[in-house]
Image (cartoon, rainbow, N blue to C red; front, side, top):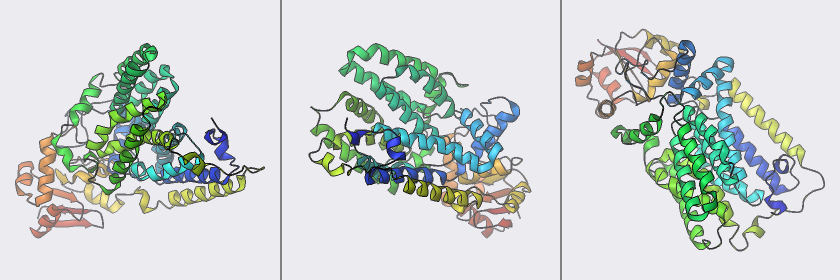
Length: 468
């Protein structure tokens, strides 16, 4: 390992080359971006679930937030994250909740950086190029746990610290259902050991089996994996953006560029590839179909692909010379680092204290919440605004929200078909709907106004209408 390959954090915190300074700035930029990750529709029902767990001191696997699916089975895979998020919100409001989510995001980025190899400039460039593949998915929801979970699992596998796997998976399984991606990574590691490292088979396989068993240490037991797998077959997922295949959303196009960049290099240097890179290849190949089929899996795939790409690029003739660092200075460049840190802290402080719109911390104004609370039940609402209603108007059960699992897939599909057509009458008559809470773009909302429903509240985000 050359000095340019040194990944110790002191090398970045006290940079002595301009390349290391640039890398420090880029890592700081990603940490700052994490501080601006917005709340999302799911944020609010996760908070509400955490509140209920704290109040009842029980983890209930039944719906309590809607009137259409009340009492239905709800496989709540994220109860521990919900409790953590609610606790953070209770102690410090949205700033502390955002800081808690930042811990997972920044952990994932730093571990990915540590897994990459080569000079700081190469790592920094790759981090910037891959940024759109995971920054777009940052939001205040348990999904951020999986970013750290994948990176931590990969780090443990590469370092052969297999004894940590059961503990990691026991915690991960209670924080996010995408622990199933970790199971896929472990399966790939087992195949890699069987084919290329027979001496490691007993340790890898035993640790993986114990980790798989650890995923049952949840209120759902062993059903957590089957619940996640079966949920992938839901027909209503075609209406949810993050469950669309790669290529549907513009931000996912970079995924194909990444695959096209990695695949030829793996083939070109297949005879020289190290055991570490073989492991990364096996895990990447295992996650690839899931990333192609569901765009929400692109960020975890990127965490595996970028370290592999960094290693492969160094094998290209002249690459190490191209990215090498300049002559180290006698004194570290601490003043620019400190100045950048102060600027970043000031920007975050301003955004948090002024609750900038980009943070989406206030999706529902007090007047809107009061108008929704005054609605005569049962209400009808859009899939995309159920979460805020659950949190800000807890006394008003929703028609639907983005949890999906308490609801039959056919019910969700019908909701979207009604929204797409604006033909609300059969649905409203069947459920005796008396009040509708909708976004201004809703075709159903436009039809209700046309048919004489009385609008009791309207703003840029919400329309509340009651029967005439």
